[in-house]
Image 1 (tube, rainbow, N blue to C red):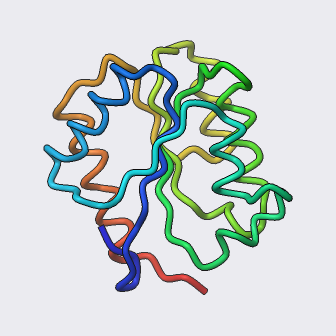
Image 2 (cartoon, rainbow, N blue to C red):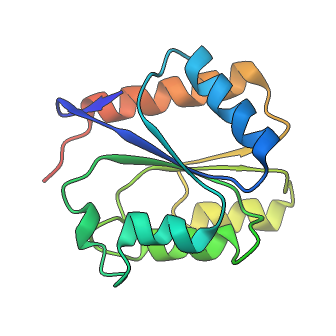
Length: 145
């Protein structure tokens, strides 16, 4: 996956090691070979995406795709999503929610906050691979102002 000729880094926020391995396996099976930077909690993920000062400037010139679980040990994924999507430097980053939560209100809340895709685990391989391919296409045509 590339965005305007630049490599996209996949940020995976998942605290369950088994799920993380499954997600990475499916990403690779979908033909995506980009670097995956894994995090098991929200604080470290936000430090990476927004910087320790939470200004977001650290990601100003980075191309990131965020795979986000909602159930994390230190904070909710919706809080992470909200912080990413409300920051002017990161609000356009695509976020894929990968979670066991299938509550309709939670799904709607994530879309309202700006999630691009919501996938319920256990992940159906074909749907997951299709979502990853669509995001790859999204990155290939995305224009950064």
